[in-house]
Amino acid sequence: MIWITSDLHLNHDRPFIWQARGFDSVYDMNDAIIRNWNSVVRPNDDVYVLGDLMLNNNDAIKIIKNLKGNIHIILGNHDTDERVRLYNSCWNVVEICYATIIKYNGYHFYLSHYPTICSNHDDDKPLRKRIINLCGHTHTTDRFIDMDKGLIYHVELDAHDMKLVSIDEIIKDLESC
Image (cartoon, rainbow, N blue to C red; front, side):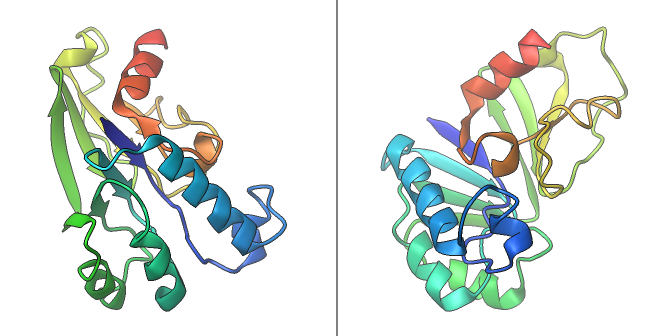
């Protein structure tokens, strides 16, 4: 199974992150993220995190090492060189890059932290013939907020009730709109 998410902000102790998400503390937010992640991800699943995985490095890296699956990290604006070094120390992090393309069941996905236009408004083509941008960064609760700009779908936790979204769910969501 392939899971996709972004903007976990593990251990980000500023209220504008955890409070906006409906939590009483950063610890409650961390616990919910860990619980939601590990309840669906199996050991051999691939999880793409599209940026801003953690802050406050030392405690957060311990959390990451206890997450299930093979973690692919797309770097975001909070992913510093020091954090990249720490990500590389995790047994479950298998890839770190700025953007990547994955193909799945005939669909093409461009994964990036930032919303990216990667189509020519080719709305007349079937979904399988288009490049779909999966992104985060904005902390929107509306996964379709940038669809007027192109085929851009938001995967941040804020848009998915603090849960990872499967690639199959994304395809179903996009086919229904």
